[in-house]
Length: 268
Image (spheres, rainbow, N blue to C red):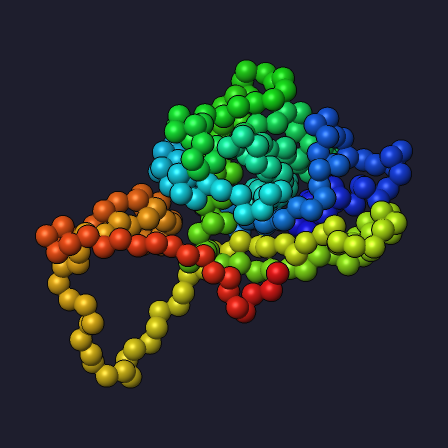
């Protein structure tokens, strides 16, 4: 599990009187069967997307904002403060309800509220990413919650854009897994899953100096075709490219369909 998720789930193995996790929103019993994603390495890029007002990422979210698992845990570490934040996302009614937690010096607790992240196809997404809140909070925190929701929208874009985003899989913590299984006193499905670390992956340039000169297979204009929204790296910076049409309609229209296939080298 990711570091903060591990610390929270570990509390389940302790007697209630020995637990140090303050849990006003009831996060602890919902931490079973979660799929974890560690995004500390791309945290600065997520902050960059939020700082730019979020409109480009909202446009892209109409295609990338979906949960990779029914219970998705997203976690990152702030490089400046060193504190860790984690968020459990569960889909309900076309949106992802979020229950967050934070670990800092002298603070280990779930957030006092829950909020939403609009998902692709939802009415909230069509209303420019409206955020709903469950629980009471001061009005001055409204903007912070909206920014968190936007940051998680950006996080889903990273998770669901595998071409330039690298992934490193880590196996579950065996000691914690044994303790949880023993506590359940049942044989069957393991409660922990392998977790995924999201890494910015830039492919090194290919050395073609020794290759023979050849002409490109396709030259000239292409038929009109649709380019999906995606992330790309340009001049060393991350950019959000909105979905758009390209090409010459006089040459016809090229339509595509997209089929997701598992990588044969990957292990569940």
